[in-house]
Length: 160
Length: 362
Image (cartoon, rainbow over the protein chains, first blue to last red):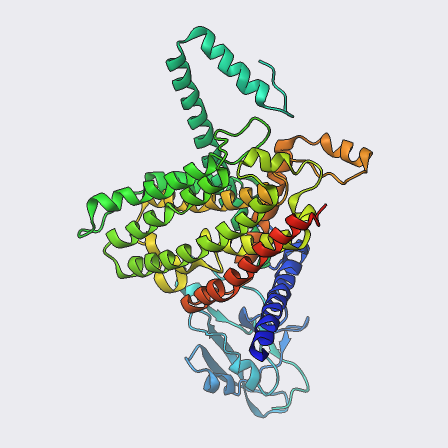
């Protein structure tokens, strides 16, 4: 008798769980404005990538063409596949001291796996992940980028 | 020719009259056969294409996607493009396949579907076979298709095909019982096996309303068993893309594959049409007892529109099943049939007999 009651209960329980599942998918079906797929080339003008998206490594510059990179080379050390090369140079500061600054921050986009380690370990927050994702080029050499703009210098007050 | 959207009997009668006047009876009958055959072929091909498109769109909507959008506006020409592609593909046969059975199998599957579609009443006058044993005939011919599936699996000489076919055989043979018994429940209620009579006796109230509890149970059981009969998800063990490649039609390509594909969607249509006819009143408009004006407004919608509205509704529910539930294992599928659906059905048929005897229905 007990097992018979269990049998009956199992039928109703089974039907109930199936209905719960159908409610979930039904909600998806009847709210078509919440659908996730984008029609990519058509919505190119209005498309906004979300903040966490890792499209490429960029170095933000201020309006005075200043960046925060000290040329310490920690990002180069942390890059697992050698996508970053730091080339530094020595300059004489107005006080007459010798100082090492960044010459070229070379970033090989073609090798990058977008692991975010360089951004995480940068002590001054000089590099961040950008949202640009249309990287197709006709020539492989165009994938090698220099992140610091020509003539840029380190902004005042960045601790070395 | 008198064309009346509400009643097609005059149209068919006029065609018959016109042909009989100018031809001998033999030639006239032959021409009528051809007309009926071409009509069904056209309908099946177009409705099949439409169903494939609907399936992809509905599936996409259930998964928060958009579905085909590129070919034509809203992807409307996608299935036509796919069909042309299938027509042009090479027909490849495995070297050690059984030549005769391999080529026969798709035809058996699609012929079974065509046999079954013949008894469906689309609208008054639009029914090519009106047997007094319509329901019996339908259950008989709809199970012929499994022979084609078994042959396809066997003759392909491929282990995946054979496993798929064996699963399909076990499944369809089991679920045939539930389909027949749930239809039998409604035959007990209607007192007739003829489809036209079944539809006619639902003039005042559809069977699912007038038969109340046993009819609703039979409807649910029929939907579940019908889904299993058409080899659709969650009962798509016979194909099981993720485990068996494509099951019994793994080795088929081109137009032969298209036949299996089309047969699957015709079977979906047949199951839905039978559910609509037997439980939801076929082409009968929605009528409620004494609401004269309401009933009158409902009569303005042509019967063929009513029929397709109901069929598409049932098709939508079956698609909803497919894109919600995970696939069952073989033992689970047989447990569901033999330990749950069959006992429920047997009790339900007794209940229906009781309802009919005590006249406890509307």
